[in-house]
Amino acid sequence: MENHLILETQELSKSYENQKNVLNGINFSIQTGEVVVIVGPSGCGKSTFLRCLNMLEPIDAGVIRLDGKEIHQDFKKAHLIREKVGMVFQSYELFPHRTVLDNIILAPIKVQKRKKEDVTKEAVALLTRVGLFEKKSAYPRQLSGGQKQRVAIVRALIMHPEILLLDEITAALDPEMVREVLQVVLQLAKEGMTMIIVTHEMGFAKAVADRVLFLDQGQVVEEAAPFEFFTYPKSERAKQFLNTFHYEAIEI
Ligand SMILES: Nc1ncnc2c1ncn2[C@@H]1O[C@H](COP(=O)(O)OP(=O)(O)O)[C@@H](O)[C@H]1O
Ligand SMILES: [Mg+2]
Image (cartoon, rainbow, N blue to C red):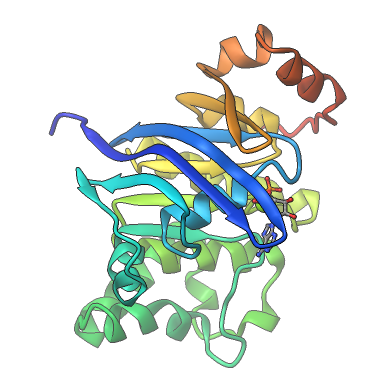
């Protein structure tokens, strides 16, 4: 199938009660199969942007369209959007009292009304793919951070999202676990998963991105192919950000 526009925002703006203009007129679009990496200083609005895209936060102004249809701010229907727009967080958000398998199959059974047998089969296949087959009956506390994050990715994938949002999913991990998680994401990218990725792993960003967006103070300051952005940043703000950035030499 031809790639096509899947998600776009026009003049998206958002304030919190005590923090105005966190997002300030964001125009953004992404095609199916595309991987967009968002970078920018802490507090510039990256998480807020992702959270608006899957209705974890209401927006104040502007438009978000998914598959050409406006996402209205009707929070009773938020679950329908979140099925299509999956999200993985820095903090895993697994249920501590459920096994790995139960964490994964819960939503597809409850929300999507799929058969337990089918979903379990798929969950086992996905766990095998991310190297966690033997952990299916373990509880989250028995897993390392990297393993928990791979479970969280599987839990998002089993919903068959049209697009996946990843918000600093390796930021809480010990360095030796960052790689195992990023490898899974790289594999997804190769398979054509549409993703918006917020990360501070610049080596990974270069490797995985089709396009990089540099956000500062709630605005898109720069948008470029990864090589161009990292080698020839145009704006002073991007140059400064890249200069002060602590590059971790993680080999992907
Ligand atoms: N729930 C919230 N309530 C009030 N202010 C918030 C909330 N979440 C984030 N902010 C503020 O909005 C700004 C952008 O935050 P965030 O989107 O988390 O940035 P980033 O992910 O780029 O670090 C920051 O100034 C932050 O303090
Ligand atoms: Mg954030």
